[in-house]
Amino acid sequence: MKYKFIYGTKEIEFTVKHSRRKTIGIQIVPTGEVRVMCPIGVSDETVVNLVKKKGKWIVEKQEELSKINASIIKRRAVNGESYLYLGKNYTLQINICKQDKEASVKLLRGKLIVTTHNAEEEFIKSALEKWYRERALEKISERVEYYTTFFDKEPRSIRVKEQKRRWASCTYRDDLLFNWRCVMAPMYIIDYVVVHELCHMPHKDHSKNFWNAVGKILPDYQERRQWLKENGMRLDL
Image (cartoon, rainbow, N blue to C red):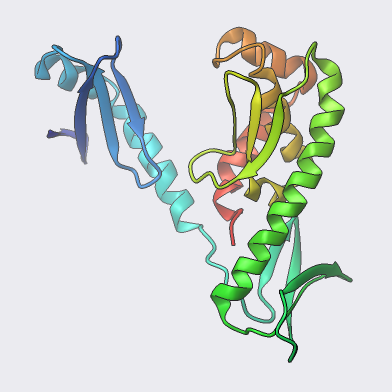
């Protein structure tokens, strides 16, 4: 069900979904849409009043997301386009060959070179994504191995996958799952993502103990976290 109210000069619209949860939660998705999850039996009046109290926070988050969405870079798979790898920009160079074989990608002298028989953008982007996934698993595995020395146990597995709304996650069985786009960020940001997930092995939440654990390894983690918030939308093909 949808509701809306006026906060200052802004109209805030939100949807409500009831479930078997114990508390009321407010979520703002990347598009700016407001979603409220609440326990079965909670009155509409209670929900609306709570959301109204969060009006200032909701407006600020929506404005923040609006700025981020406006700065999204839509890259084309054409000669001269700029692509990120480990925080640096590389110029895309497409070499067309006559041989009908799998496209290859390599870095050479400041260029990201794709050699392919198919000049279609979707084909080239597919080749680029495959390359990024391979590099991501390689670099992230190296950093996990380094930072695991700070912990009493090792992750059960390390995988790179497609994740639209998060940079990484840690399962209850300590499998670490990373967004392949992480490898576009500078190494010190990759380190933050790695340490964040490793700290979820002993702390399966974002409690004070969790953040203390992150801070012991990376005292400046808040700056790294902020960089990811401000620049994360740029990390894509």
